[in-house]
Image 1: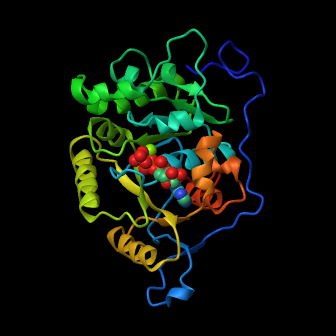
Image 2: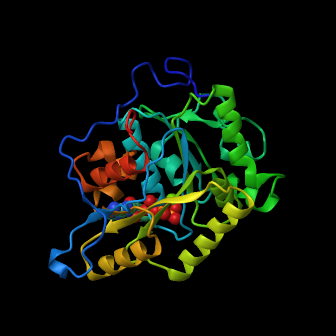
Image 3: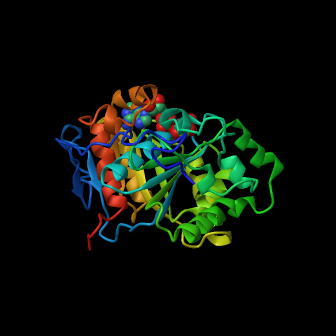
Length: 317
Ligand SMILES: Nc1ncnc2c1ncn2[C@@H]1O[C@H](COP(=O)(O)OP(=O)(O)OP(=O)(O)O)[C@@H](O)[C@H]1O
Ligand SMILES: [Mg+2]
């Protein structure tokens, strides 16, 4: 369980940083079709939302996946978490990337002093529950299950039931807490389609796929889809692709071609451009989400819009 504020190891009472509402949201225009024939100069970043799209409702689990490195997975996980936390949702982020543990380094979960830190690996090897591996961060509403290099042991030791370990841990947690602890769980995956990523997809309601403009990899996308389909068939029939984000988007011809291509490949999924901004690369070093580091930036507002599309607001129809 997370250490409550004010207890040893927990954040001091009232010390968590509240993620800010956006004061001047620079919103993308929402459209049902892109103006394919519009001249390049007239092409604007717009969110494409198919008429069939219905946002989910909490509690929900999202796995951010793409086996391509540098696609924007960790940024997407952190910024969706920050946007939801700013809206008052309680968010748990699971770092499922052993190589970099970039998300853990960015959000810096606070372990109690003198206690062996637990991580997602401990959950895979049934050494503790998911709640026991969850730690608060400095940010109100965001708790993190950290990762570390030793998560890679899951890939080569393949503990029994590993493919279902995250799903089982989430189900147990919901049962223990009467599903009251978190509204949303986000899983940041490694750039691989290994066992840990499969376990993330097996636990998710929706896959969120960031694609870096300039890095479209047709073969890579085909293997991601094959994995998603296998997980749907063998492990998790409810899994669907909930959103595609075009990260580091700009107005170039390449970005436009990619956008059109992706919209054709995903006719039922919202395609959301996230504009390129240097703020995205500054925020991890600052140890803050872009949402609080540079709330005026397009990155913060584009992710806010994506977050709203994925999850209906409380009380929304
Ligand atoms: N909208 C954006 N504008 C500019 N830079 C961005 C944007 N989004 C992400 N980046 C930068 O791109 C790089 C890769 O992003 P990120 O680490 O989120 O990708 P990743 O898919 O998690 O990578 P990995 O596969 O290594 O885990 C980072 O330096 C990040 O700051
Ligand atoms: Mg990453």
